[in-house]
Amino acid sequence: MTGPDFTAASIAARVRAGELTPLDAVDDALGRIAARDPRFRAFVTVRAEQARAEAAALAGRADLASLPLAGVPIAVKDNVAVTGHPEGDGSAATSRVPKTEDHVVVARLRAAGAVVVGITAVPELCVWGATDTPDAITRNPWNPERTPGGSSGGSAAAVAAGMVPVAHGNDGMGSIRIPAADCGLFGIKPGRGLVPAELGVNSWFGMSENGPLTTTVEDAALLLSVMAGRPELAEIADPGALRIGVSVASPLRVMRVDPHWRAAAEGAAAVLGGAGHHVATARLPYPVNPLPLFARWTAGTAADAKSLDPALLQPRTRRHAALGRVLAGRVTAGPVDRLVSALESYFTEHDVVITPTLAAAPIPALRWSEKSWLSNVVANIRYAPFPSLWNLVGWPAASVPVGIHPESGTPLGVQIAAPPGGEARILAVAAQFEQLRPWTRVASV
Image (cartoon, rainbow, N blue to C red):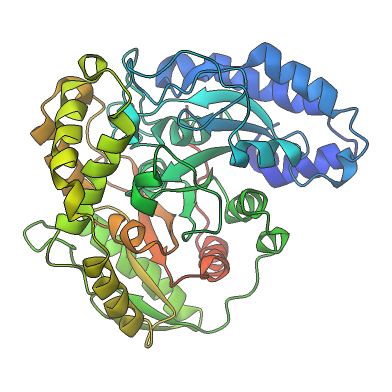
């Protein structure tokens, strides 16, 4: 099963039609994982025996022919509960006690017919923009010397290497969109409240959301519809003629945007303009003061680390959490409310906005866990300043592949964002772009 057949939509359709058994679909994915994961280290756990047993049981379900994800092998990120396995969260400090029930999103995926074949690597407590665990460095299938991003880096590497057709991720400051851009995938962070979050203590003060990482927009819409319990989201509509804002300047005036990333966004906008949309350059009203975002990032980490032994945390995470305890009192609604008001004004003239997803190519695949807190923070902010605005306000945003960086050999991506409730519109625009400019779905590995 290769090429266009290795998508969630194709696998589920073939299983529903009786052309493919769930066990065959799972065995195919497990074979790919066995052959490819030793190079990329996307998985922290491969559920070979359990997945085969679950696939065999799935074949006997009376409703198999109606399941939207019938037999689809899926990877799940290691910061949500999967029954029978610890929730490691990339840390030596977390409990090794297996979970006794699934996270609600995992339960929904399984109820829809998906089979969890493995659990994917994350950086410690999902704080960082590159993925390395205490045991391994996760690598980008397009260029193994580069990171697949973070914190959903293991999920992105698993999909980009063609080990699984789709994967679960979540996004607190770009943790779906950064890996999607790094690995040439489509990834969408839904707006607040569409998909149950329930991540850590407080989902980083409401900034974190669960969502899909896929090779096609169709698959993303399908997974999102299941995660949200909203079947209508699987039906991608024609976007019509939209007003598209284009904002390519860095959110941080002191940091430059790589010209290839800027050109990717401008080129994508031109393609959509040629399809009949009204496209206009219009800088987003980025906040001048980074403290509201920084306070949530650090204080959210502090909340998640509170019950853990600090001696077992990595030094960078320990310092991040310590800053969060100091800054917790600065997590207030006022600055965010003012930002929301500015964005609402912006979107009176635009239906969606396009930006680069990243400001630079993926950073090197290193043991970032052994580097200083400052070097981690600077590296993360310098290459990924664009995504976090949409976490702060809780609005939907996605990353769409648009080509290959000529120097790093890794993919380029553009971000499409919209006001609350705009997930279907983002999917429609992305699907139209995919039709006009199809991308290579997986790396050659």
